[in-house]
Image (cartoon, rainbow, N blue to C red; front, side):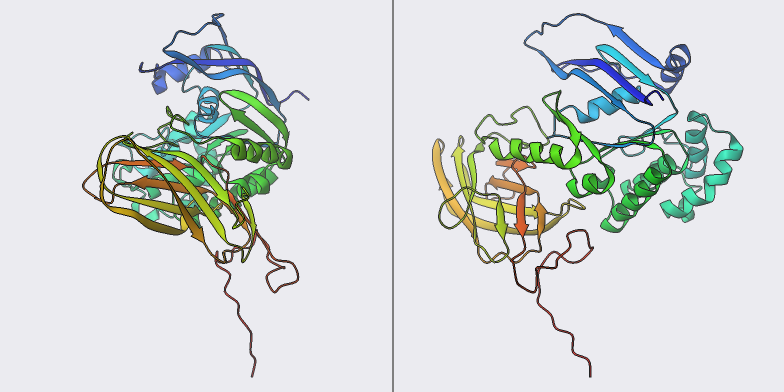
Length: 423
């Protein structure tokens, strides 16, 4: 049996500072009629000008019918660009794509929704775009509404929906309308933790039904749970296409070896948000002996060694370190330390150590959010590193009451000893 998705030597080139072509729904549908299964572009220019870069470069892989494929990589690696091309939102520069089935995508909140239409009308519109009959849509209608939990606002135009309502309805429509291929880009980044877990459960059911899913996520627990095979993208190229555990091992190795300096991810606004007035120059995670590590056992002391460079004079200086949940991406604990309350002059370099003693967070992986900047809330002088460093890994102690922790169980993040007493 032929694979449901074939991608051969796919390239995508962008020009910095130039708006990329955007296709209306009518244009996309017209193109779909003209070329229902193939997109072939013959641009053979390999050379780039100073203003151009490859968002994707020589991407080739296949996906079996019924497979759930994970796609991971740092921000800016090309993951979302790949799914936008597969969704026909943007064309490739060149390469071949063969899709043997109906495609539904959830790339951004409410992608494909019409702002002036109600939730009810958008359900039928999305179903029609997928090629479903009204009878098919009606048979799934109640399930979609129940899952999205928006029955009270079903006949309200979606332009009045909150981002959470938008996401619940968009995910519910995409997951229930039975496309052969489902493309999902970081759906767990929006919505509360209860809905995010609900989405994971639904995606597991979709996988069991034999539908094909391409799933982008920073959530390594979700990737491990749903995907047997995972592709790692880095700077637009495939670095690993292997079992999920092997690919995640390669990804963590890349993260551990990233050198943080003034230029790290300078073009990536999502990972390196900041004003440029101050920059992290180096970030190290160490034990109390000064050994560089990212994996610690419960009860150990963890030290963050943070070097920085101040380019412009600012009032006061503080550092903020937050640990994120690997399931929902929410911040589960954080520390803030004021380095100085005085005026800090330009061209000042410094290093601070923030220690977390006797860490008592349950075993698991914790993505890091690091920020340094002025203590004056009225002054925008800061630098942020989000998901750029390797995650902090906490393991359980042997031969203790914590040794039976299961990282997949939905229990709290902090380890609080307890005892059951029955009278």
